[in-house]
Image 1: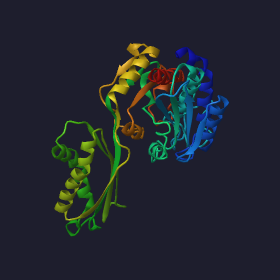
Image 2 (image 1 turned 90 degrees about the vertical axis):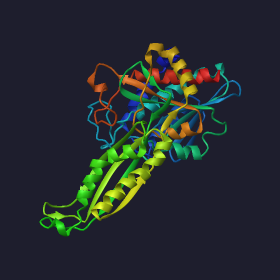
Image 3 (image 1 turned 180 degrees about the vertical axis):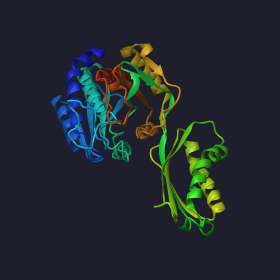
Image 4 (image 1 turned 135 degrees about the horizontal axis):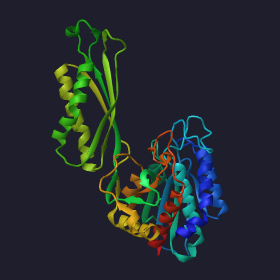
Length: 388
């Protein structure tokens, strides 16, 4: 499988660089989807387009009817001004493929070319899903609602993410929770403002906000009584306009990440209990919004075992690393994993060059492009083995 990937490697690199120069935001991936359609058509791979707006699904159909594997790549970019200095850097000022989705698309198209060449060696169908909007409201759920898991019904799903900090040629796999649910919260506190010299005549929302920020971690730990990992981050605090006026309002915003659905269901009420008690003490009122985004991405154990076994054929067993802890980022592949046994893995894209070690979402993010060889061949091997 790796030899077949090498055959298409130059094409994958060209595709990745073409897409990198023209990044497009969520649900605006018009050029990207047209580019994908053109590559599929050139390789005589049938497809459907305009699913959930800009989504595309290609079909590799084997020699006989059988099971169905879904392989997914996301297409959208980020509003980041690129500073890599690459010869193929973004031409869309202020936008960049800083999360590697250009590589995901290129790798899946390479996988498509591999499987298309050997489709007479397996039965069943491979659905190649090119998904919009992962960085925004999420295109996975809308595509699922439009029926991409049906006709034929999907039996198993897989996806990957390029990951700096993992050496190229290696992948990381994990049973169970891999990514967290990336929920947000907004807290607006309403007090009584006035002169900074007469705080006794005011109800200062900054004091209440400060107490919420300082005590929330400890109070939540007591209320939730869990050893399951979660992350609570306060990321924005807005209050006041000058040094001598106590404001009427203060606004706190942040994110909370959980990997367990039961813990997630308890968190909103626990947070509000803390906020309510502190606001009562300070004699102010509040508004609390807990904003649910994607669920946690939870890998199916059996599917992950199958994927790891396939990956070991391509990479050798020592290069398939079992991850112990989840990453607390969010991923809307979670919706696929809720509906179908699925496995998501992390693809190494770093080498000794510091340029390949910058984090995701960085304006200097770049990859060792040879990771396209390994991503495409592992995905192809998994689909091939499952269908055979």
